[in-house]
Image (cartoon, rainbow, N blue to C red; front, side, top):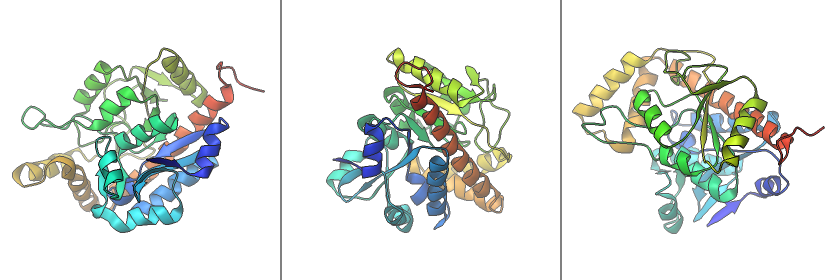
Length: 303
């Protein structure tokens, strides 16, 4: 069911740093054709930082960990016709030989099987706004509580209920760390979020926290990195969500709809910032992965 690319297989077996990347952003996260360039840039940044990229997706009846440029092109070409593959969807995509673009949760599930400890992404899913009227919680949270993986993101996706998501992460025992910040980034916005539990200043410090967490037989961690550039999109999110409530946009269709509205209203600025933060987060995930592997099994840095 799961197939590792030779490079990824060799890197895991030799104890090298490996960083997982998702494919939903390729098929669904950007205007047509732009997701492929983002994915390739994220992979380039991972390699530049000294780690091996392992982009995940379901292709031809196999959960693939490590994709070629040509295989990534298939996700880009498929666009919305590719199924969003969360943890619950992986087996169906495999059995039915459906092209499955993995979400953060789906990618985390693959990490658990493959033995990958680090993942870079833009933002994680969480508790949707208006939960009391229309319950909706991303499977990303449950998978973070099960997978021993450190996820680097720019916080929780902006269109979600950030405070409620943090409460759920606390209940699930998932530490939320700030990268050189004491407050949670709000995806497009660097400041204004609630406090995080702890701040880390270096990749080695983040790796040490992860190592201690996993030594206690715990699972996922979230390392939140503020975007270099900020954009206030809160009014646009509220307006877009109002449209979804008065129309037929529900479930997994809400996020791409809201993102498309923000893209249109900001004349593409939101997409530009999104591209930057995804690549930056992938690079940071690689830096932490390299620091983790360099320290060895006992946590002491090797000469």
